[in-house]
Length: 340
Image (cartoon, rainbow, N blue to C red; front, side, top):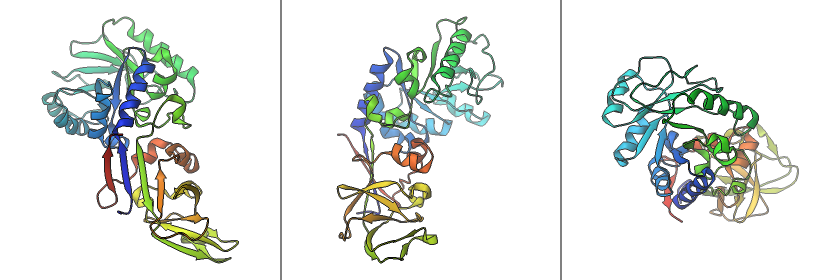
């Protein structure tokens, strides 16, 4: 096999879209597919999300949106981040929609969404002006829907008050966490990213919200060796055997997106969870084995109960970052799309 294999289950994406739509109670689902679909493949994810009932796509940049426009000629595509002046002509020609995030003059001939900074403290307008003719939507961005619902509710109320004088415009503020657990945030549409991929926005069990992980990542033992007491593996001798044991070397490392701070996390070797030991290298890491196993024994880095959320807790980060940083180039991995 290749050094590692990535498998994207489009059926899981489609079912997650349906789960989110059921939670939204009539609001539209807009699929956030920025950063190459959170590392899952933007075009494939977009196709599955739309098949599952999503009605629009959201990207971070105009170039991301232009790539999708080639594949989805008639789909609504909203660019969430700022667009430079030199990108406006392409956005206009490709019928993209843009978020207005600052006080620069509004571009002509492009559908716009005025973004209120209701408490995120990032992109957005301090106050909503009366919408000019080219505005089709009013939006904001929640900062704490996954961690502090009370502050999120304050943001929602500010958004509701700010948009009340302008009826008839499509309103959207909910992200994945709010779509799942804060009914007041749903308005007319919800922009959902991480939950679409079957990863919990709350950092815990995605299955608690009916979500299915779409990404699997597998490799194999490239080498198996015995360490005697006092022998070590990896740079810095961070792991020293206190008794004789067997370890396996997996040909994946931080150059592939298996982060250096994932030492101590658990992967699955054959059918058994096993601990990653020693310092993770650019192209390999070591895992404790129950005994001598043959080279070529399957190793699951994600999937089959090995979750991005659990890896993220070990690394002190969020699952979003882990999956976005997996290297899926042909030089590093084989990528397979399935529809199970």
